[in-house]
Length: 96
Image (cartoon, helix red, strand yellow):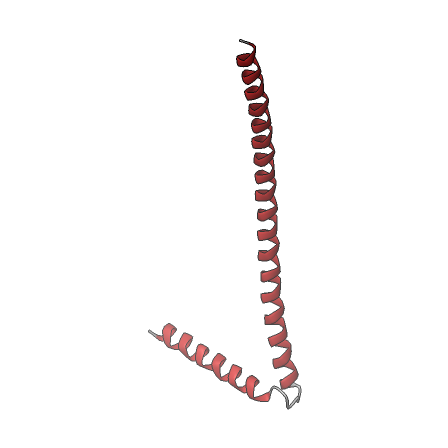
């Protein structure tokens, strides 16, 4: 009879440890999920900032070319031609 009581006590102890471990793992999983969401948000914010800075850089390159810089003259001409085509397309759409 005492062996059965010892086995039951051992099982109860193991079950308590398992429940504690499950609680710990659930808390850890929750924290990791929160950290992942924060990291994802940070990456998205940085990506948007990087896109904004790239556009600003391209605009500055074009402005620099228009001021007489020889470095980006070809790119500026291509950009201007592209803008002219877009304007022509818009005018054609309005004319219809």
